[in-house]
Image 1 (cartoon, rainbow, N blue to C red):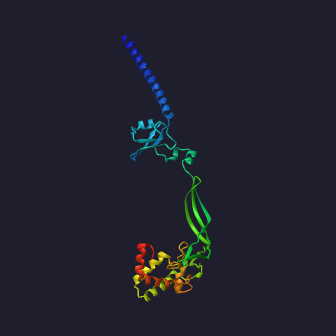
Image 2: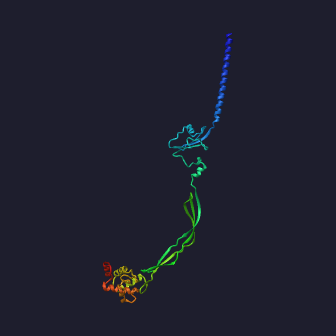
Image 3: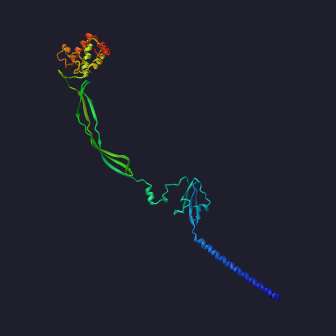
Length: 313
């Protein structure tokens, strides 16, 4: 009887153990299913991480926040490094995290709106422009006075500007011209030079018109100095003397003293002893002046020395 009861107890215990195993199995399957559902509900994303050292990492993550992704991969951002997108932002569509040294790069337009991109550039406009530009004429002066003391200018040909057609490439920034480059030019009209002649001025003296030039007067005086037996140094002294007195101008007249002519004879009528045309004829004036120097000073050099000391001769 005892053996039968013992066998029955063993059977009951075995039945309870099987129930427990069954229940545990059911619970395990339920938990596994729940975990599977939870796992499938979180999407895995492939993310590329570009480190400042140049190293690239491709990682899989279910996180979307930049700081979480970096933490998952044990990446520490140093003080002098910048993270793009910002470490507190969400992962962008390009699934890339860039870590660089220094300040955040401003030339990366992947995170800028179209309006921001347009605003960041100053528009530069380039145009090709054709203009007509004047070519200034030149003034040419010709001295035909032969060294005359008294001269006058006479325009023998009027000048006129030329014209050329010039093509430029012009660059504008915000409406302001910043660069202008000549591409080509074509002369439409040649400029005409202005020609001015310096001529001997016809001086009217009280006795008529004075003609000739300083060079002509001095050449005659030099010949007459040599006729007197004077040296070249004497002639040079004479040049300085009469430059000081009259500038070798036969019509030179001192209205206050009455001195007249190249030698500044005082009074002018003194020169009448050399010729009646003493008011206008340079030869008459020079002949009288040299004779006066010879008789009073002996030579032009002596007359010049006296003029330097006294102010007159």
